[in-house]
Length: 299
Image (cartoon, rainbow, N blue to C red; front, side):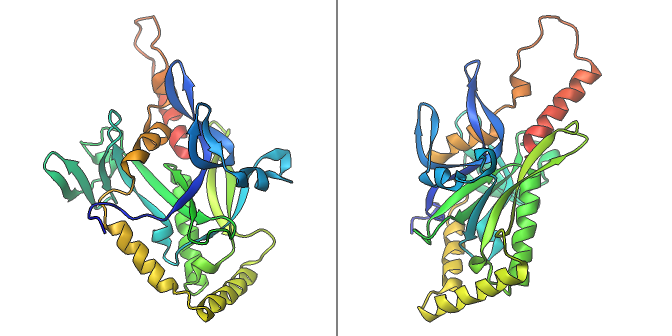
């Protein structure tokens, strides 16, 4: 195994609730109110849709994909959802620092160093550029049981909801998380900061039409079937944990540019041209800008 290279789950495609658009010659993230499943190929119009996207949209209300039947690969929630505070260099796309609020790994001129992680609000290095960043790997369908689709997010609502659900489902199922029939769901909420407009985040639940008890019963059957044919879930979790730990940063060089484009680019509010007037911005202007920045991170 090559040291320094994180070995991550094989990825067949991406799941997103937004896209990157070009505006005034600059690439900016734009939120959406539905899921999009893409392949790993891009063309001039952006990411090419995966065949599953069209398949799952059939019968969906208004042709909007707002739920996806999935399973996770591992019983350990932290292997399925990896979340941390992350700072990327916006000029070259390289990861600079990743931490958990306690300790962090930083890329320096002398190599990777370990330091204390004071969280983004109290970090002098971050200067507002560090965000919570998570990746969730899930499997869709049965054609490739070890292949996955990755959902990336910097939204507190999505990260908090996904982390809680996965931990709870692991607990109540008796460590059969990987066998549970689950479903990604897009949810909306309104807050004072959003001016009562809907913002969207991702949740994960048992599959539609199933109670939790029924889902656990199905998970037990799946677990028994796997054990009967020699499927070793514990060994799979150990292999995944070892693979993630092999690298200081998870993203490979060919992925970081797209990650920065979609999640760590300047917000649209920051990209607006300055007014011709030399009048200093009012307190209301500053509050509106701050609210816009928070909304970009909320979903």
